[in-house]
Length: 302
Image 1 (tube, rainbow, N blue to C red):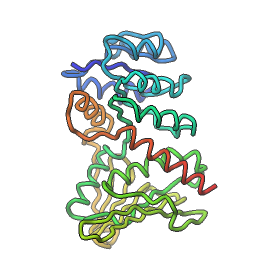
Image 2 (image 1 turned 120 degrees about the horizontal axis):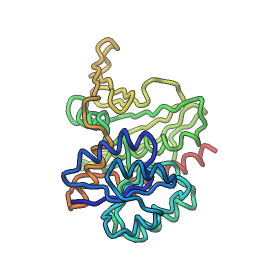
Image 3 (image 1 turned 90 degrees about the vertical axis):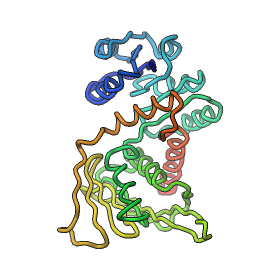
Image 4 (image 1 turned 135 degrees about the horizontal axis):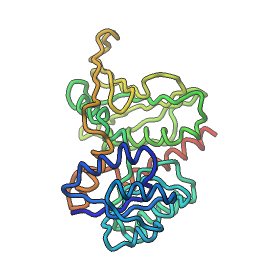
């Protein structure tokens, strides 16, 4: 039985997403301790999970009955609980993926090189029903990606959308194992900037995938052009796709809301890895890479 401690157990997301996901794993996972900086939220969540309330995040991290930590939100302690987990070699799942300050990024990058802890960072696209379906389509009907586009909201500033940029970069990299991201832009305009991933194949041919970030209002946040078709993504559980350049009326629309939720899948994978499984997770190194590249892009754009 894996014993988990939860830091940041308040709000609707915990009761509606994380608690049901954890209860679905109760045959091999149990929440033993809960801490939240709002005391009554900690008590409510501890009662929901039949767990003990801790008075501080330090008490929870050092608790004898906790094998790993789920850090679901930070509140006033900021990154301090995460830093403490890394220092104590305590395996940790991080759900809060806001853009880190440069100082925090440097501190966590340094600790990441020395810790023996298993670190998973939540990435909803990588493990969402649509993310997994994209991989299936690219491995079968549609072929390899050629161009990938992320659309950003024109009514929000770029710095306010830094988390979305980092998530997109992390997902593109996830879809392109073995490819290297070239941080120098191919082109930039006020509304669109373009980069590339590239990989040298066994034939010595260089495979290039172009990625675009566009300031454009659209129901489809992502568009992927592949060797033999296209994919449009509107959310974590819905996508449209087409072979070749088919007319919009010929689009295949897939609603995947009956598939396993991305949160449940990621918590399951994290717990499997804790006991030695080889199942993939989005780890801290991938997260730090996305954060570092996002900062470089924002600096380039001024």
